Image 1 (tube, rainbow, N blue to C red):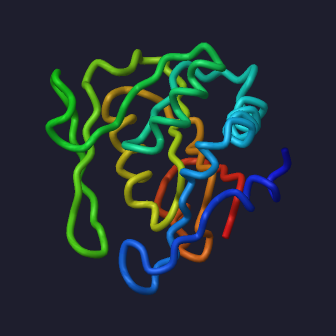
Image 2 (image 1 turned 180 degrees about the vertical axis):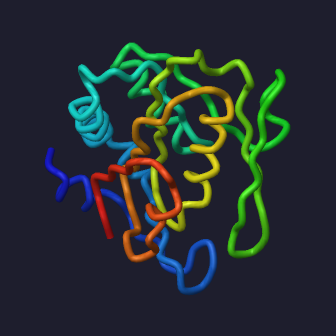
Length: 172
């Protein structure tokens, strides 16, 4: 299955979550076994044989892609979550949103000193979440090799905020 076909399965939802926004809904892609497998296969092809040691999945849709990719590559999975969701000692990073601030956390013991990390999420928009995640990984001792997204809203220039190499498969 090629990228054009995968793109055709992703649903556009106008005016969600607010007027003027066209939301890229990946749930039809996830529900389609062939499309989901093809998406993970694309990701695996890029990272197979690399020096990665951990995958970081960003709450919440990054968990879906991160878990499947970690399994396929036989790597550990680290979860970056919203506050109060992780049970052990955490590092926290707050970041700006267009309507306020948000915070992400990771367990302090998530990484070994030489861990090479791939951060995975479904979509790159303004880059705030990804930049905060990169900061968290570094704070916890990991080395970010790349930040990967199935979808990038390129017109928002989010990759400029991240401070690490970025790869996306579908760019709008």
